[in-house]
Image (cartoon, rainbow, N blue to C red; front, side):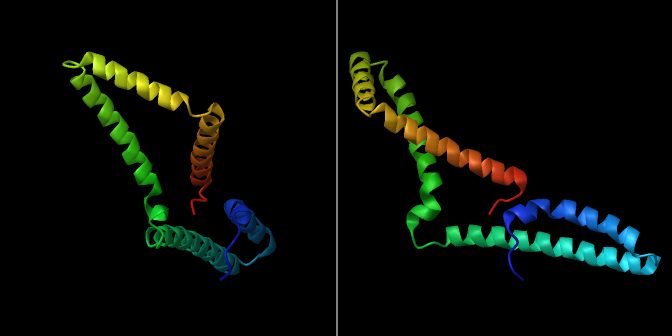
Length: 145
């Protein structure tokens, strides 16, 4: 069965409802009408199953990818952020005994991060927020693939 495009997939529930109303108007015999509605519901179930299979195949393809960054990029980014948070907590504790060294390290880090051009920070932010925004919209629309 060919894959249905995301646009058609998002319209599919509305099409099924319209199809059911059309069946009520076109088919006068109640038994035939119920058979046609059953066929329409089976088509809807088949569509839902196909969407689930596509979603699962995408997840499995990502998880089984030979490229380690494909399956570990998002967790790695989170681990880096967790590491930064942990270093901040440890730095605050170490600052009890060596406040001058901690302040110097914080100032050095501030200068180091300040040396990165602002346009690169904007590019990173736009890319990261754009990606997460697009994924959220896809999930909201039910197109999570």
